[in-house]
Length: 116
Ligand code: FES
Image (tube, rainbow, N blue to C red; front, side, top):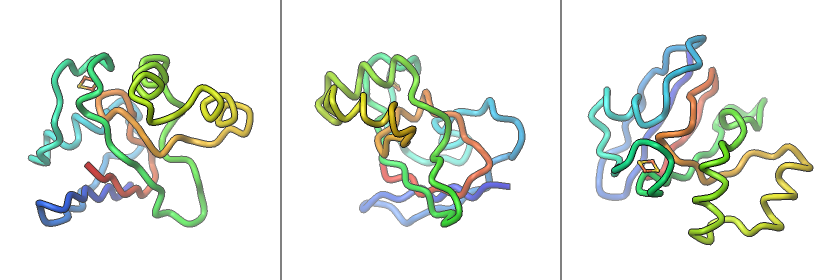
């Protein structure tokens, strides 16, 4: 069972359980189910509206979900959140990006903090 804490300066933090083992639920879907007001538009990794910052609060791991999808890579590069060089280094070092698109990131069995 993963604990996902949603944090925004304008709202009180809310921690919700993510169903472990399904590995198909996106962060955006989890947020909507729990009435977390994350902005979104396309729900298809195109617009970048659902950009969130994700960090692992599980000290044993530094996973933060699966790797970036191709759509996430493109949006993060175009928005200037991650440079091409940083992107390449992350791939080489197998380091997850702190910036994710909530509609693309699949929630894993990992405790995370999501800043939106
Ligand atoms: Fe458009 Fe996620 S809602 S990129």
